[in-house]
Image (tube, rainbow, N blue to C red; front, side, top):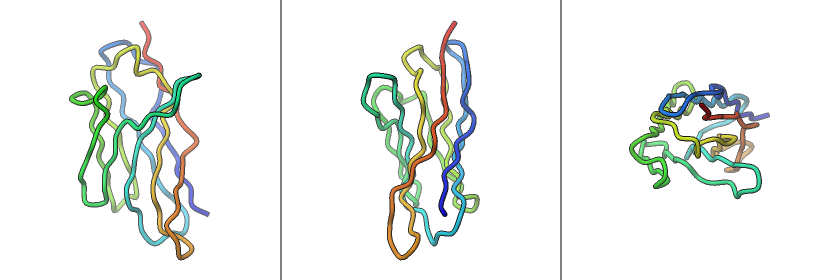
Length: 119
């Protein structure tokens, strides 16, 4: 069974930093794109950052210049470094990945980790 497990969320003051991690575990052959989404209650889930297996990255306009996505393919882990956090960054952050398992590419999600930016 393939699992994605996030860690690193928490409470931080405006202007602070947090680093999220998401590790894939279980039986699989390969991991393709890895992404971070976020969702605030009552709002749609939003793509925050994406990274291809080769390292090409993209970001939502709202986080460009503040967030950095990276991955360690040897550890099957994706990271999201969040700097200069703002109140509006408060949300549940979800890890997402396309993983080749059981002879097919499938979409997997983590359970989510809460990030709260508050003074």
